[in-house]
Length: 432
Image 1 (cartoon, rainbow, N blue to C red):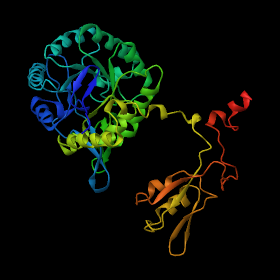
Image 2 (cartoon, rainbow, N blue to C red; image 1 turned 180 degrees about the vertical axis):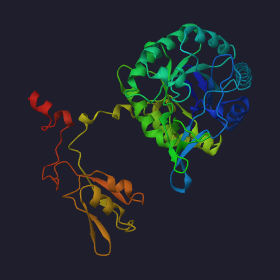
Image 3 (cartoon, rainbow, N blue to C red; image 1 turned 60 degrees about the vertical axis):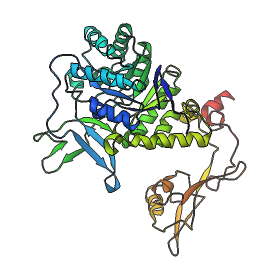
């Protein structure tokens, strides 16, 4: 098996799979079970300042979105940071790190946006022997209304300020957890870097209401007839997370800033995609809450097999796809494809025809016996037919050779490298 040993901002772990700060990392019992199952590290559920513990609701804390066969696609949670006393958490963190010295143990923190509050909690965490801290600037519910979580994460100046406080007052690596509830993730990432952050982690949960009870007319989860917005996570948020990770990895001002990827990771393939887009490791939550801690074993074996098949070491995967992420203006407009249907695989359901005829470009014909064929002179290669077809591999996209004539436009497929040199580009015309 490929060597999955990971080192992230100086923190070593036997594999790059960490549990994210969340209910699965709330106490010693859970974390020990996680490490015994094979997880390389955990981020302990967010601790707050000393004093009266946070009080969570004593009713439903989760709302859900399901796909076919009740496959869980997304969870909305209204749970706050740990409601267990600080001294209990610190004692348990110390005991776990003592017994699992080879595992990564990072502690998530959220205290008021005051320097004294951060200076007070940092030495307490440092004394446990924890490997690092993660600043929770992402939580969008409950704590944000108290001026913490995403209320800090949405203000780059606050991110920079608190990060600098922490870097000045602890030896531990500082990871800044970013909120996705912002228009441009580069601003908080740049602020974290200016503050001296060792890394960023993203994404935290997305502000959401998943559903409304149409009898009681309140958002779910419902507490005594009322509901509130919460944090959305799970497989449904993965595309948003991948984009934000890639933006940070490829932007000149943040390139090179280590990234811990979070958001909808359920399989080894999901993890590999995050790594390829620049994440140095990954954090998982919803998948563990859905399938249990042992899901990490599939992730470990799957990623190992993939790396072996590619004859690639783990560090070689990190960032491998970043150079291929570009802006729309640099896409090659001379790359032309057409849809084609494998008649042997087609089950004649007509889904491709309905989608194309009603909502796209009327490029699929239905013949006698419900035989569906592509009209090349109408096909714009939008790929919708591929996406709606229920048979994998039945519809594929065929690339036209350079020099061929596009039946739809009548133009010859050229050899321009990309849009910047295409004669239809106003900028290229101006340069000439």
